[in-house]
Image 1 (cartoon, rainbow, N blue to C red):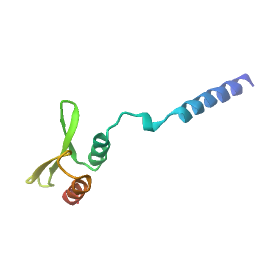
Image 2: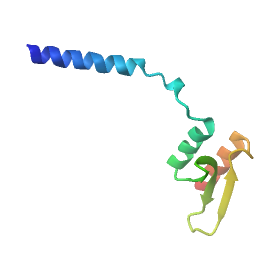
Image 3: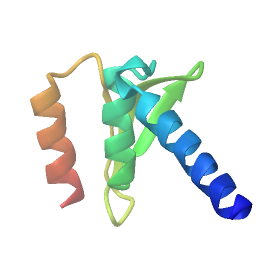
Image 4: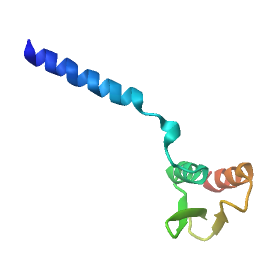
Amino acid sequence: MARIQNEIDAMEAELRELESYDPSKTSITTDELRLGLYTGLGVKADIRNGKPVGVVLTSANQQDLRVMRLDQYDVDYLSNQIWEFIS
């Protein structure tokens, strides 16, 4: 019976920890979040001094290369360009 109570206590402690997690308090920038999405699609990141600054698009045959900075393009335009390039 004591073993079951210990398991219940451990699970309740884990539940409290999970419920106390607030993802809005993370320090991820929107650029880092977008870059994470793009790299998940197979796009390479252009990282300088430990900060994401752009994406590197390479065609399947490695003949076409395009570097696009995150701060130079509108979010929608950049997303459309990446989607067209990878599809």
